Amino acid sequence: MRFRKMHGIGNDFVVVDATGEDGFALAEEGKRRAAEICDRRFGIGGDGLILILPADDGLSDNSALRFRMRMYNPDGSEAEMCGNGIRCFAKYLHDNGLTDGELELPIQTGAGTLTVQMALAEDGTVDTVRVDMGEPVLVPSRIPTTLGTGDGPLVSVGLPLSVRDVKVTTVSMGNPHAVVFVDDVAVYPVAEVGRLVENHPAFPRRTNTEFIAVRSDREIDFRVWERGAGETLACGTGACAAVVACVLNGRTGSEVTVHLPGGDLLIEWSASDNHVYMTGPAADVFEGEIS
View 1 (cartoon, rainbow, N blue to C red):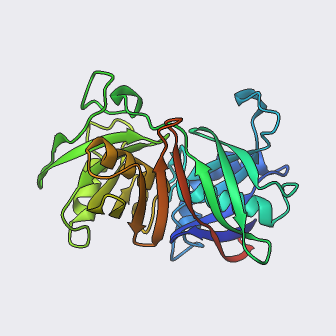
View 2 (cartoon, rainbow, N blue to C red):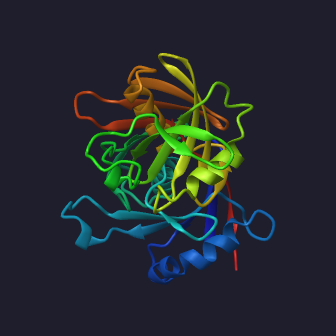
């Protein structure tokens, strides 16, 4: 199986072109294979396995839609979406000639169809990608969480844990997020608290957990505990959820630079269409094959 190792600000993935005849079988084996492939000692190593598949015509009437992204976490669970992953996905499509050179493409994901806009480096390869991440979901039942029963957003709601109580603001960007504001992300016990929040009964499908310290109206510091992966260097959907939470709590404006351990993302929650836009880099690491 041919693969390419890629990363988006340190969030690394094993990307496989599964558009051929074996694609369906590989997608069905994804859960089992992901754990082996993402193992950093006995496999290639990564925060996820991303498969490039043909679009499912039954899920959309968009004639321009040609590709579908599926992503598996290192524990074998399937993620609805991955913000850093979709930028790598787009770069792979362009740089490997799977498209006709288009710099704007719709991509089918488990969170719906998202549009990417690619910017090229001097050598003609994709350097950065801007992704229309769609509208944030704030209705508790759709995140999903049992912390609230109404249709309004849950903003800084108490969540009791065995080690400490935290306040979470819940957002879905196609996948669930719980955002926690802290004084200093560098010293906060992310692993201890993140693991408890991820598996809390209030989140029936588990949740990603973001820990945020606000620098200013336009900058925040960020660490994340990802559902099914643990702490990672970056999370694109998490950065989007964090900025939405910042706006809901009145802590920042709607256009924010998010400083993640792996690098920076620019996130904008647009007032004109209520969509969240994410801009950041995507990079190749190496390629090869695995038996």
